Amino acid sequence: MQKGPGIVVLVTRNHIGSTIFLNQLVNSGINLQAIVESQAILAKDNNVANYIKRLSSMGARLTLQWMLVSLYTIALITISTLLSYLGIKQKILTVGQISKRYKIPIIRTKDINNEETVASITTYQPDIIVCAYFNQILKKEICGIPKLNCVNIHLALSQKYRGLNSYFWVLANNESESGVTLHEVDEGIDTGKVIAQKRVKISDNDTAIGFFIKLSQVGGELFINSLSDIVKGNFKENDTSGSQYYSTLTKEGYGELVKTGRKFFIPGDINDLF
Image 1: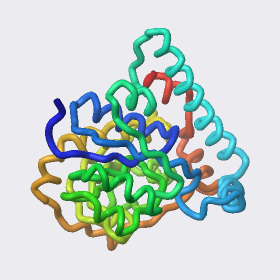
Image 2: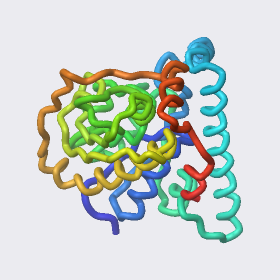
Image 3: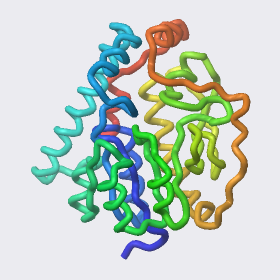
Image 4: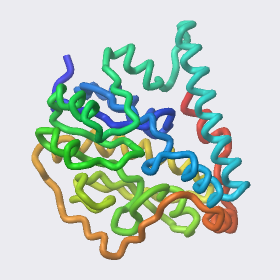
């Protein structure tokens, strides 16, 4: 029987970071009550015009690589699912496999803040809600559901980098280290009180996607090891006054990444997971 605080996890569909996190949770025996899976393509303003605008800002070369990563990930997830039906043991389970094996319900939604989704999550009366690379902004109704707290895993040191795709921007800016921040969700973006942080050195061989996967693995470990601090409310102020907010990937950022001699993605980044 699972013990400890009841947890509802918010994840993004076909997102490798979310998949890594869920595997870490079930392998640790954490009391996972439900999975909320975002079906939205974009974090906000989810429409075709804004999607095209996003791709345009990325430029042709980066868009192609980003699409290759997405298609490659979906292909590996599909293959993993098929192999599991043949009884072949997999290193990492998909969200659907986790749900089936551990009998964990999935709530699928395009809008985390609509009344139906809020009501569905509320029925579980979770102690903690954790955003595991979730691509939607939470409103007060969601943050007010858990008995203890609503927390987020941010793949950067929030005192320096806030917002989206920090794993990419730290490499494009040729930083020597980054990290992971586990923090309380507040009305700002990555500004909530810090529960725990871990610094991660950047290797000369790190690709953008490879570094993202490395940080995702650290993020799961950080959350699991910090559960007692969440329960006890051991938080500290998050000084983001000197931080920079980053958003979507851009062709200019990709140009800076290339200047450092790094690649955005190689198949080996993801192959080792499956």
